[in-house]
Length: 345
Image 1 (cartoon, rainbow, N blue to C red):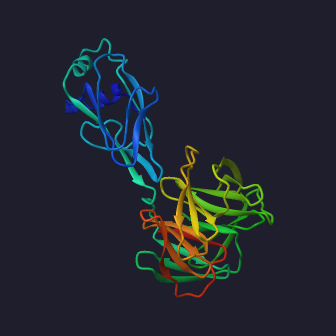
Image 2: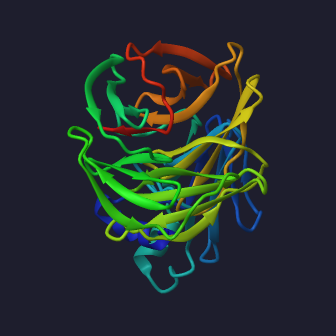
Image 3: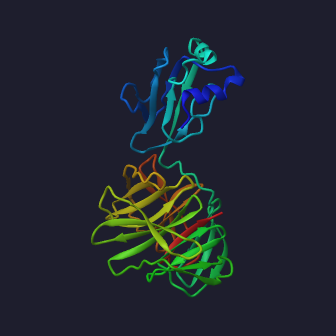
């Protein structure tokens, strides 16, 4: 986190700094300091006069339910632009520095502006779905919903994920495999050290260039996340996805490292949850109605949004604005989607 002093020094060449901080809060959240001294609510603009060398506050952007904090906005005279963590502003090191004190006494205004987005503003570079029944499969271009290629192999996996040009699959025994999505060639990576029984199952996802396994326990309603070593296949414990008892249909992560888990709501609705893989903070649950009664088996994240896939190959999209699951496309191929849907470029 950059303090006010460091930011001011970095901007001296632009001859800008401030003795006022203007907080502009858009729809979707609020800004609160750790001390509780300042609280700027949704849709408000709050101005703070910084008049002495004792100002020392940490500003947090708190999203409302259904929104995500994307980061602080980059703009002229903007503090913490491009950062997605708490913003620390301090003048405690200004004493004895005539230049910084002169800036403090100026009438310049600086800005602190969070960016909130609705939870469906998913950022992923993926545009293809890799779908298989364990014996044969298809690749689907989600820009046009056209099946572009087929592949085949005769290994049944519990789940799989696309990462750096390859598909990685895991069997219920815990063995991790590496698959060429075009040829179907399979190589053993190694044992994850994990296994599942009749009351557990694996989910796989990737985030920030790393691969993870989520083990779901139906009986205990627990969801433990493990990080996988891509060289050996071994998985080490990372975190728990808690906050609500649920049965996960599938789990996938977007390029921000936010893991989405979808829970079955007896076909009348689905629940969507997110876990920040780096901070290990669980986001709010959102209920999405399912008026058509789609029976989802997997979810997928591409640059076009969050999708659900039925066992029969019907593609649905999570419309967070309307709060509904909507039918989108039916695949021409008649394969049964039994074990996993991976996404890739």
